[in-house]
Image (cartoon, rainbow, N blue to C red; front, side, top):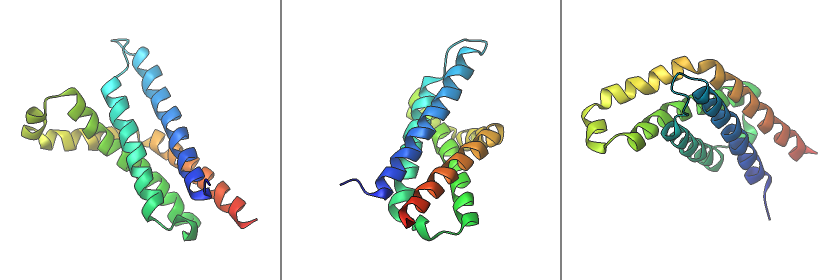
Length: 140
């Protein structure tokens, strides 16, 4: 039996993967190189699945206020960008090189958040809407 919590989690994850990977793919194909950044797509996708799994597994989001749920939705997107950039770097570079320059890796994650903050905000609003919709349907 699929619970409402699992249905909500997979709806959020799939919508995030579709929107995020579409932006990366079409942004990459229209760039100077004309090639999407596949390691970044894999890193962000893995971070998305992991962070939302942890969020839905360990949080009591059904009892959150609207403000707290909105802030958590946006914060999850920010964490996904930060950890996804780091995972993408680990995929594309040798581990020793990444560990030698870990301050640069942290800076890349922070810079990535600054660059795509409007997108993180939009996806956070989408997630907030999805979770709110499923919360309301649970009360009926």
